[in-house]
Length: 276
Image (cartoon, rainbow, N blue to C red):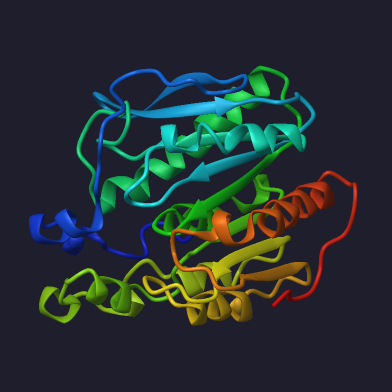
């Protein structure tokens, strides 16, 4: 299921676009992580390493490979990661170039290339250390592009997929960010192709989205859900939530849905239907 090389996103790698799409910041000092974790540097290119923080609970637990939003870093999830650990899930958060402890500068082409190297590294890292629970990519907002790219190209090695506040259509998102896609020669059908990628995903899928998301509307979540042919898919709408307050509005629903999905692929339960 190889979709690499089908798009040319270099048109977006212009200063006026990158300054709106990426908001990198550094992690300057260690934080109190509140649980077992380890910092890892993932080589993705010559002289470029991606910072990651792996919060590990159990060697037989499911492994969430988490790609965060464009204004976040892995350290922002130090408080949330122990919640995953307590329900028996390993939480492996990764940054982008220039974010956290990563080197390099963020670009769209770099982000889409790096996710392949990150996935291969994580898969090998887990296998070498005896973690047997398999990998479930999970992407929030901008991170949805990375996980759907992984799903489209490495699906045989995946157990399931989670998309949180993800986008189906890039042009409206770019417009909201102040980018005139047409003037760049960027067309939806030549872009990230998130809809095309999810249309080939047949394994368990969980989509989580805020009801009143003003950045990426709930209709994008519905479009992704409808395009996916999986017979084991769930669309969770967090009532009253915007783009950045899903945990405040629906933490129990959110974590419950993630646990249900992970338990399913670990052989502990079933998942189906649409929750609204």
